[in-house]
Image (cartoon, rainbow, N blue to C red):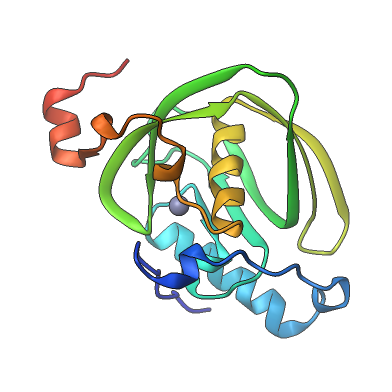
Length: 177
Ligand SMILES: [Zn+2]
């Protein structure tokens, strides 16, 4: 397994909508190895999610896991999951605002409004269909990763950039809300 290089903001791969993964590609050894590399890379950089475009592969794959993460303390756990060709539909209009960061935009956080509840359909890493409801931080992470697969970053979703903050300043000037 290999730790992959993470593309940073400004790299055009982050602004290019990713292609669908053909169903027959899922059980190929190269593809399965790529998923393992994505998981290792996410763990290495303490991410709660990683989209394939962030490691220079323009395909619709995201991995996510929320455990006891130092970058996002106090968030509810989400088991390690792999989403291939994910589609999301908000279940209602309820929006929640919270801090977000991104491994492609190091050291910075901003407050981003996201839908609170989503229906998610995708394939898992074995190519089996997934269909589930995600809420709260889980829903936030999925919206962030699906945005990546559509060529968007979280800053695109901020109605007001005034909350953009370096991590050291976040700790110093912004208390937990
Ligand atoms: Zn990101």
